[in-house]
View (tube, rainbow, N blue to C red):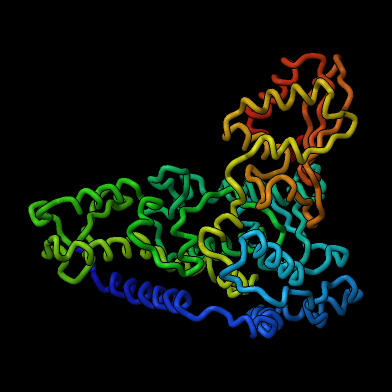
Length: 474
């Protein structure tokens, strides 16, 4: 029988978290007369949260910077304008993102000051990346080198690096994440994940740092974490209605229990049976003496509260490690005061729906025109694709299967410069293999001028059927 002491510690954590969330919700909104003062002070508060490495960079006082004689002009100025009158809780999400991105820019070291490098072998990418990430300055431009391969990172390889690492993290054999029982695909933490194991704590701390680096690079992450993970990051309370986004079978089961006239007849107790890795089953009490405490109509809400807390907070140690990694690079207030959990999820993952008309509208051409037959055929072929196929094609072209916030007009290069999706013309050679080539660092593909629509379709299908990422096709 499980010890209820751990459950009680979970209760104390979650209740304090919920209280802080309630205080945040109930505090008075900004006084318009104080908006100007608030706007001028808000970044100062955030800067106080920034770790020493960032303070040194921002103040141009880092010994590394002095030794390398980097001129101050290569470091972003910390001062920048914020609208004098605004209240974060009333702002549109897109406006928040603009201010947030601007704030992040002032944390970064200009790319002209040089880059840090991570050199990894693909077969050991996770371990080597974790070790080397601790040696870099997260605010400097990062370049990736895959050892044993001929490559040069102009922005595309770091996107591949993110993609491959998150693929490693969610592999079934890693036993870090598993698919949640939800209508939309999402990942929750592995049920029997050992929270106190140092290796797992280090991995989740690294995941937090990866999310921070992705935000600094303005890259979307191709891993769909379950909503409860984002709620725990932002410290939002998790309620019964949220269960449908965590475990829909359990949610519907609870709904049916609510309809029972006499729940006591179901012979259910304040405990759960947990299947362990070795196949055995252990009983975990949700409260002290839970195995002998029957669920009734009167205490059902209390049972539900305990069940949700156990399900969500049993991995809180690892979630806290993730938060520690994330907030060691990006100030905690800069995220929590700007975004809700849903907004932060969108910021990390980008827009899940790919709008063909938006994609087509914000595409530029080189060597082709909008009325070129090859372009007409391309959009005609793509318009019949499912969202899954569109995601694979977008991954090949840009290094991400998600659209950034703001749609295709917001596509950028690795250095934050506008880089619209573009299609370049290259010659078709009947004597050679004619492949569509991608340059993900520039969001660009090169399409041979195929003589027939079917040949173009075959070339696109070759990309999709082989799950080509585009990076090795440069």
